[in-house]
Each structure stands twice: as structure tokens, then as C-alpha cells.
Length: 374
Image (cartoon, rainbow, N blue to C red; front, side, top):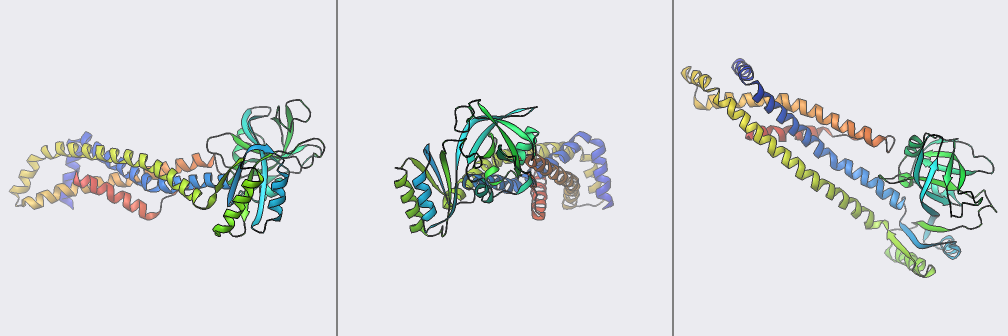
């Protein structure tokens, strides 16, 4: 052990740049491996959030190509023996919310039954406030509230020009935020406009028409193919096939896997390229060190060391670099994961990004093998 320590210190003293490159390369490989092993779980969780918002925990999503009052469809869903629950909402894209400080692009979902929507939204209520009589009540996401600087109890201006909500003809309405939800389920957005859900059920007589374009349907037995097909067939007939139907079973999981696979393919190529580059740098750096150790190797031989023992001492030096670089790499990788978590928490409150203990061990092992092999 004393010989190894002395040999390594001499090597670092005579070749500081090469020693630094080796340790840095091992650190980078370790950090990249830890991130790569952990990022699939992160990608999967993010894609799952998208799938939850896509289907809202429901078994079927129906998007009408034309907004209408859907009276016959409501009647069917209320009476169907196969349907456990549902909710419907209209949609206004390209809207905007104005506060004293900012103007945000938003997607406005409006409904007569916000209670049902929020009960089924798959999102946690973070804060609430009492509604104001004669005003529209609105629900927004945690991210929306942060971006707008508006919380539960605050009022915002919602631009609704040319829509049924523009009942005063002014181009906007005042909406009182009564609920702030975590940015999951229905309230999750991935880089798009934030959502605001408006409940106009208390404005009877002011909003003349009720137009709906989206339905989430919850079946009593989503695994019964015949029942799923029966509901889809009935919905298509009622709407004269002016719709798009998505079945959650199979569709959501496939979409998640496709998204994760695409992201992982790109990341895997990048990590492999970094690992190969770092291995080459380790090889050439250690080649310089080895050439500069000729005198010491002669001393090893003169003192009776066999070639195998000399090689073992050289490999032991590499192992010292592996330990130093590996520990630094694990710390750096953990820091990157923490940074990713902080970025994601701006989107979704309470989300965590972590690596299991075996991933730390595997990342260290891969970096060690790459370094020793190089």
C-alpha cells in the first residue's frame, strides 16, 4: 500500500495535467452513467403526467369536431349501464389572462359541472377560496398561479372575445380564482399554454349557449371489450361520427413507451459517445504517464519485482484515480439529478427525481471498467 501511494503521488507530481484529465474523465463518465440510469424513470414519470392529462384517469376520451350542446349525448351517458361517470367541457384556445403584472397565453376549459371535473381531475387541491356572487369561478394549476402572480381569492381578466362567455360583449370577463391545483392530471401542461377551468353554472341566463367539445368517460368495466365497443358505437351514432375517440387501454401505455424510447435512444447515443471519448482521453493520458514512469519501472525490476508485480502497481494507480474520480462523479451526478428535480418542481409541486442505490453502484462500476480497460 505504501509503494502504491508513493508511486501515485510521484505520478501526480510529474504529470499533473494527465492525472487531472484521467480523474476528470472518470468523474464525467460516472456522472453521465448515473444520470442515464436514472433518467428513464424521470422520462417515464413525465410521460405518465402527460398521459394522465390526456385521459384524466378515464377509460375513453371523446373529442368532437364540432362544438354543440350535446343534449342527446348527455342523455345517453346518464342512462348507460356501462358508464360509471363522465364530465364534459368546452374549449377556447388562443385565449389570454391578464393580471396587473403579466399577460399569459392560456387554454380555457369551461363547464357547467366544475365540481365533477375537479373531483375526477386526478390533481390535488393545494389552496381554495370562496366564490364571489355574480362572478365566474375559476380553477388553475400551481404553475399557472406562480406565472400569473395570482393565488386563490384573486381575480383575473380572461379574454373570451367571440365566444359564448363574452356575454357582455366587452371581449373579456372577470374570473375569481377559487381553486389552485397541483400541476398534474387535467391541470398538467408540457410546455404549452396553461389551463384555466371556468365554471359558469351560476351564471344562468347570462351565458346563452352551452357548447361542449370534449368528454372524459369512465366505464364500469373498462376491461370488457364488448362494453367498450358498445359505448364507442353509441357515441359515434349519436354524434353522426363527427368525433375522434381515444381508448385509454393500450393507447396511453404505448404513447408513454414510445415517448420514453425516443428520448432514451437519443440520450443513449450521447452517453455512449461521451464514454468512448473519455476512455480515449484516459488511454492517451495514461500512456503519457506510463512513458514517464520508465525509470521507476527499472527500479521495480532492480528490486526484484516481476513484470506482473510492476503491472499490478500501475493498475493500482489507476484504481486510485477510479476511486477519486468515481466518488466525485457520483456527487456530480447526484447534483445534476437535484437540479433536474428543482426544474421539474416549477412544473409540478412535490415531484422527486432520484436514483436507487444500485444505480450509484452500477454507474461507479461502469466507469471503473472503462478506466481500467483504457
